Image (cartoon, rainbow over all chains, first blue to last red; front, side, top):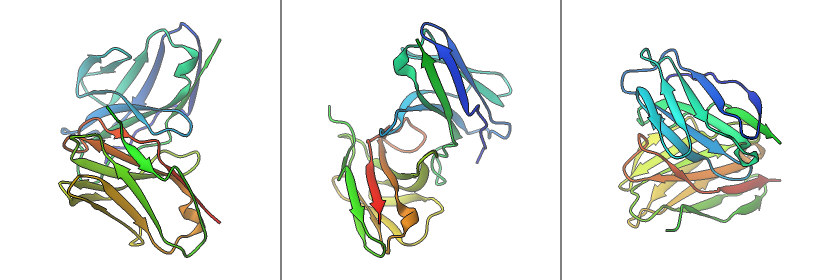
Length: 110
Length: 113
């Protein structure tokens, strides 16, 4: 399984764009990159998934360089409600299951 | 549409007891997986079931078992409970498998005294 490394914590302010980078140097050819968001006492919530280049949906963008050894989750114009833990996952959905690391604690201040 | 539902939401047990946790996936979802999340850590994969068969197993002892029923709902069973089993147990469902976005329930908080 590809191991991921992401910052333990990040701070930002309302209205700013936040970029969280995840390193996954030993990503395999069949692996996808997926990000989840988790609030206290709730289950993780799917944000975005990609394989290469750029993916955008209504809440975030995911940037993946050509070598796929890292990825960046971009949250545009964050609000206080974006304060949460963000997990970067890399895998092919095989029998080893999803591997969550410790995630990035994002704190948004007024 | 209803999301993934788990029951009970909270449970208190003592060491050595047995517990059964239940999960109802989103309608139409055939894959169910279970995770254990201890405080301050990310969720850890326990099992995945698809079409009532076990398709994946994490690094958990044999005290942990699960099954999936014909209606795709699932149970997680834990025998001989230990203090270290205290955690949030999460269930997730998806249409086909783990390579698709997972929809998580809000979990069962299990406390072992």
